[in-house]
Length: 115
Length: 112
Image 1: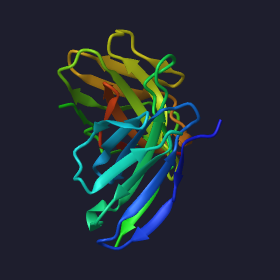
Image 2: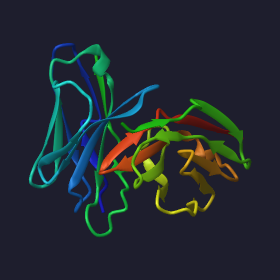
Image 3: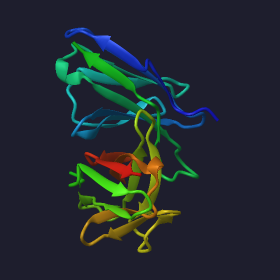
């Protein structure tokens, strides 16, 4: 079974630009969540999608948005990039319903550098 | 609001020895889950161990075990017989209502 796939793995942008990151969950997983990882801050929760609906949202500005498609693939978008947005963005999927252990399965992340 | 605190930014241990990573959390909820995740250098995060709050018995997975103290809101991870492959960032996490809260991580370095 394929794991969580995130693209692109690395990208460099300049301030003011926007970026879209993609995440394909494990087959059968309908929950997809996004996290921002920075040194010293750990993982900060961005949002979680389930069946194309945003179910939970963290404390990030409106420049951060996301969506989920009918095949459970998810995208997140960051507009008007700032230097502080440089981070590793992690996507995780999980199984809902019977068999749900609460475990998150992570992708390798998309490392964004804003210059 | 739920918070997770890992007070040890970095730790070192000799191969084959035992090390304990600390984690405390704050919540007013009674039912929740606690996790330890491991992030090896340049590799993806994986689950190490999981604990349901309603279970009093501490979870164990081979060389990994936890000390769960619900009243104290403490959830430490003990790694026995440390191996070089245990070198990684370790994150403590709290989950409730499908929402996860992570600590800032502890970088563990296992020395040969």
